[in-house]
Length: 227
Image 1 (cartoon, rainbow, N blue to C red):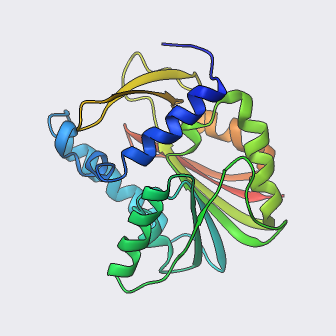
Image 2: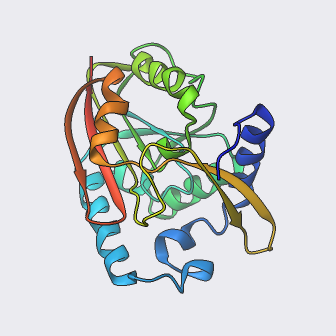
């Protein structure tokens, strides 16, 4: 379903993720409402592929945009000093607890991805997992310009996100999906699926695309050197 992405819709989507914090990881784990999905073994194998890549990425001062529950933060902090940024307070609390429970440290910052609260060239790299697919096409230039502003020249940015895994899911097209939380509340969420090719094109404004990949069916990713 397509529709206009308004400021009211943007706020509604932000509120949705704040409400979803306690159940977000069910998606990664294939639990709860996701337990009856097909190809569970392949899903877990591809999540493991992403984990392997993330575990070997990052150094110095690293900005993670849309950190969510800290699912990827817990791996990034083993190599870098992570600034975990998210707009949803409840997501940041999940991140903070997850990292603290593993006796590690992270700087959690509430902020807007379209107006990053960091100085120019103040971080050595960046990471965003499953965030690019929620950035409206009209707002991509603003978002990428902010990333390029805060990451120093020569720094690297890693992106992982959702690939089109069903026939009706076309890459680089805005879809509005209805999401149902465990309390049965219904929410409309913007989703844009990517392939290695669309990631390469989309991320070119950041700098030099060093690598793109797919895990098979469900996910894809890219590595960019900021220029």
